[in-house]
Image (tube, rainbow, N blue to C red; front, side):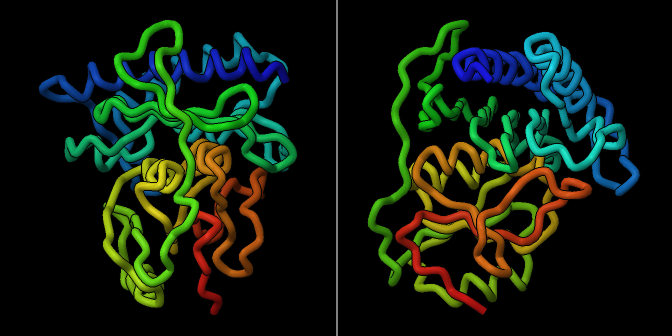
Length: 265
């Protein structure tokens, strides 16, 4: 894989998809329907998916492509692939809360090596550079990358007073019980893959997810966090979260700055 081309195209397509999403987001009304699992999907999901899929297939025709909106057509057991969630945080989109993202990632041998997370309503763009390190690009965003700032996890989190981020739409009693086992200074909530990015920038130290997610929900944020020095591990045994699993469904997981002392069951 030519990682300079990959970074260029992932960034470009994320920005284009974000612009399309914002056109629909700012309109008076838009189409919403329910998928087979009763989760909502909008015209913005479909438009962004079509744009990104066409762009990636043209740029990388020999690389397997997996997207949320076309999941039923995907062959399983791929270990190297591109994976896309064209609109992560549809509930936040519908409620006009702004915490939604465009996620594009490249997975090689089960590891998310490169990714881009774009939150168009927040004006925040995170991605991994050619060498795998993570940056946040300053807005406004143009055809060519503007000023970028390296991002990195909190190097010395205080385990007596951690900053914890949790899901805005999927918070539950099990998550609260797990968080209560830590010394917590403060908590924040965020939708979509922004939670990974808050850990990546040091704005949070710990993000536990004790609920259902799919690989397209997490791969791009996982790549950004890894490129910032963070880790994502399975909740049950603290081994690294891997990709290309049957059905593309994740186990529960924990994303964190490495200085955090994880609690074991």
